[in-house]
Image (cartoon, rainbow, N blue to C red):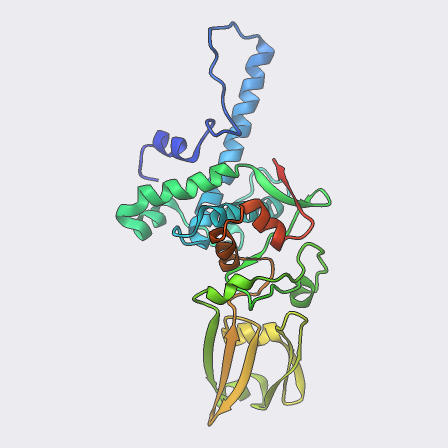
Amino acid sequence: MKKILLSLLIAIGLGVSNNNKVEIPACSIVETKEEKQDKVTENIQTQRDDKLENYVIGVVAGEMSVSFPYEALKAQAVASRTYAVRGANGNKNFDYTKLKQNYISVDKMKKMWGKSFDENYKKISQCVNATQGEILEYNNEPILAVFCSTSNGETENCKDVWGQDLQYLTSVESTGDKYSPYYNGTVTVSAKTVKSIFGSENIAIKERTSAGYVATVSIGGKEFSGEKIRTTFHLKSCDFTITRNGSDIVFKTKGYGHGVGMSQYGAVYMANNGTKYIDILSHYYKNTNIKKI
């Protein structure tokens, strides 16, 4: 952060957001020792909140395009904050940047946005400030608020991808994903490469999940998960088809990412059609509620 620290603090809303306002007294009052201690505690808490909120700004900037509508950016802010709070697990000194979210620093934002930095940073920080301290909970615990770029039109069940039966991460319709620039993809791999990795070039889809993603693939009589194939050949999605083209094997995909949780382009579609961020979140994360921490 190369600007004056005070400017940055004002930009992110330190102590002056609607939900965390530091009240300025109308007249001078002599404070007791206890009142002074309360203010010290409040200031410490504010600093802790700012560490998290600054991180969320960096994640929203890294995970979504600044051109996305406000409500989609707000939904991303809540999801990313929830993921961070769950990851910290109560550790006040936790380094949020170690989490698997695409966090970018202010310096990187400046390089990425150039002359548009001030305008873009203001938009992102406004969306984060509008949701300050909000996280998603299920059974009074922060949820695993995973998200993906684009689904195949339906998000995936967490159980089918990672084996965890989380009731708030079940398959839901996400019709707007077909408008995502990442909805369709193609990867071509030589049959020789497939054989060198798996011992055979005879590959076929064996089973799909209820949401249409590939669950298992058979290669030379051995079974592998669709996720294994996705990561091995850098496919955009686990919803893929397999065709042979001479000495090559062609994978055609629908969607981008693991498909679990909120679809970012689905959120954009919903926001563009007037859906508020709270309703976007409740659509993708079933039976959750928002809590302010």
